[in-house]
Length: 245
Image 1 (cartoon, one colour):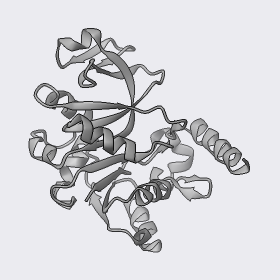
Image 2 (cartoon, helix red, strand yellow; image 1 turned 30 degrees about the horizontal axis):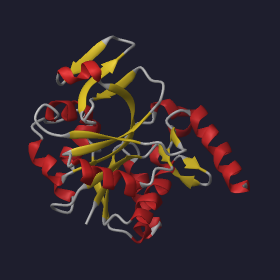
Image 3 (tube, helix red, strand yellow; image 1 turned 90 degrees about the vertical axis):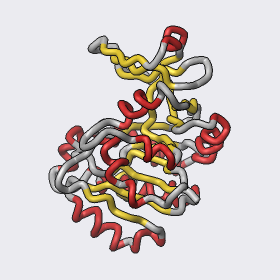
């Protein structure tokens, strides 16, 4: 058994020309909402339950799922209408909705990826981590550092020079961009001490001091963050080219 969670509660501020009257999750890509692309990928992989968090235009997301009969899947809503909880807070808030003792595959709604999810799950099992983060080589100011054992050891921001260090192994570490796709063991839920609004990355950094927070390097040919209008347009063009070929 395996759970999935789609982070779909964001305000979509970078996509304001699209999100004035609808949530980011329902912005269209190739004739289908971003949320539908994510659900279909997770369905094809074979997840048993999907939890979707909602906040901005939450009613529209619920109505969309009803119109699609939940795509024939077990889909539950984690309601964040009163307060947007960030990524860590969202998982904490949704605790009771997951199938007990089953891992949780987490997916940002604005990510387009050709990653074979089987590879990530296999990597997670092999590395015996409490969580496994899917990583990319990408130019960014903010990145995660993983040591020679592929374990999380630091977070750094080159723009602000801010650092969050787990241990000294960061000195000989490799730096990657986090792809917005990750998998956690169910037992991680019992280790959450934080409350309210908090980032999953901050939770991972705290847990990495005593637990295995692993990285999986993703070399698949497609990964795009669709949070900006220009990236959304690029994705439209790319999908059309792929369809022609």
